Length: 259
Ligand SMILES: Nc1ncnc2c1ncn2[C@@H]1O[C@H](COP(=O)(O)OP(=O)(O)OP(=O)(O)O)[C@@H](O)[C@H]1O
Image (cartoon, rainbow, N blue to C red; front, side, top):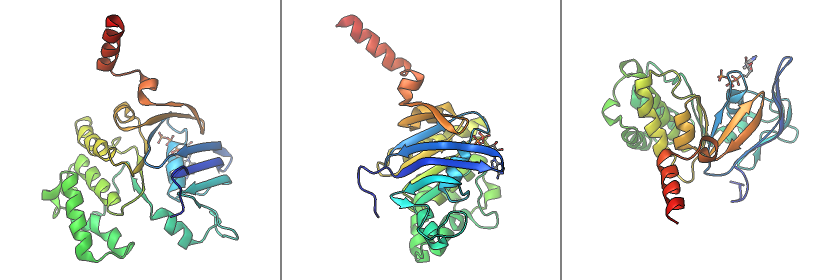
């Protein structure tokens, strides 16, 4: 890999993205450091998902530059909407895992096969090894006992946890979450949040989350970015943005009174 410790793992430089006459990202600049956990919050239609879709190479952009771990999305003399070869884009994608709002599991495959297929087909991992890893990951998300079930036999929260295990099976360096709990009943949000909160302790894993859940922003991220009309209008540490948690404020108050 080509990234140096000081180099951001994600770097949008003056990116403009249009859908026809609609400008969704306008001269967009955004950097994420290796291992950083960043939440994007903003009004519906402001372009948050588009940021993730561009990173995943699901959407091309018109102007500016984008790099992941030092790899530019455009190659010299490259072709197609990204001006890059499919091999180059595939290499970039191999470092990214994405978790979608609607889980996107394969309905005709068991939970285990859902987690095993991509490492076998895309990374060329021997099936036995991929299965061992999948079993470990399913245990990590609390679903070891569901490996032989089909997605339709699981709750939404359980399906989303399988989707997280599937994304992790590719050993991504960057994990993208596009509103991972917005399709869930409120009582199922907590179990997904707790898995994502656990992942936030992985120092090397960079996480970029789009969410309407303030709990994610507060409990999972190092930095919260408020996004509006294709730009980041405010950003900072969760405590600076939302105010320190009550206990912390009380402790600070008592210290100031006692000192
Ligand atoms: N494929 C597309 N073709 C045309 N317009 C699109 C396309 N995808 C997104 N848009 C438009 O781009 C704008 C940004 O969409 P995007 O999904 O990134 O917003 P968002 O901030 O993630 O919204 P939400 O919170 O509702 O998911 C919206 O106005 C949307 O209608």
